[in-house]
Image (cartoon, rainbow, N blue to C red; front, side, top):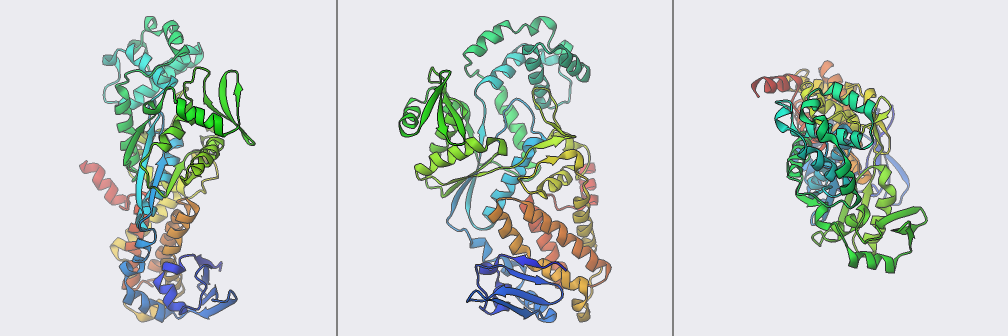
Length: 501
């Protein structure tokens, strides 16, 4: 059997007590269910010790689940950390492409808080520039009484945003396709209202409109983020740091190598050019991002920016600039999300929204979320390949545990192979959460929860569950589900909630 490992020796009281201070706390402990612990001793040499099943179970019973986690809860005490994630443009609903940022960032924030850190989650509202002008323009020409009743505003806004982009490009086939899918468009935006001449003139020098729709779009995005346990502490607006940023721009021009390309000032870096500002001094996104990061409340130890790998160049430049000013930051990147090989597109209204998945059936959003979190962030994901089997394993094991199936007070049960495997997986919980923190990713937690659930189900079927293992599993399952933002309810509970909602 493949050996497991646990990187949590410094704050795992069971491993520390078991190995009696002989192990190097900086090295992982490995084990397998055949009965041996492998580690590095205090001199760095390989060492091993046999596992005593009854002794381990007694230690767990004596220590208790809460005490097992006690030291972890203060592991990052007094650390102040900012996590920025999602921050989609307020012109379309939250979709599965952007959900990956929510899942990673939301889980990171909860893991950090579970370790005692003071965490603030920031959402940088991209309410400045072309995309907001386009939606503002089309909304002003829309007969809102013709919008379909009972449909969320962000869903119709996303369709209108796609329409105005198609009008600007004179993409008649796309307009026909969009109208066929949404017949209400003909009445809501009649042909005379679709003349884009004035819009083209306005886009030459776009200024921020008084967009009353932005707050509503942001509120709906926050609602959808909360469905996967992600909550925002601080809202920041791009429009508040937009426009000329002369002091910051001049400072960057004087301190770093720059070049003007067709009138646009750019940072010149070995890995590429980073646009800063137009010839008239108006800022571009990177400069506004720098200004926003520098303007945040001081005293933070670290800023984590959860944003796709396609923004790696800008994030490397941002990190170096912040570092030069004594601000530590990290880019937590991730691969793209596709649907059947095609990227999502707000301009084409080719989106699978979080709301659509959530309303498609009880537990469906959790199923998709868990499948996404099982993948390492660097790997791209095609949602057409997600099968939901992992979520079935997790909810099925929880249903068994709530019924108490397989629980026995027989001491001999502790030595059965399924009981041994479950015991070791229960002791790996601290290693899993530490791995998620170290790797800046929920995938160690997601994989752990699925594996733990599978081992619990095997032990339940073998009637090899002692009361302490049953109690620890329920507590660990709930804790891991919370860190991942999943609803720990079993399928029947979900169905009951849906009927009474």
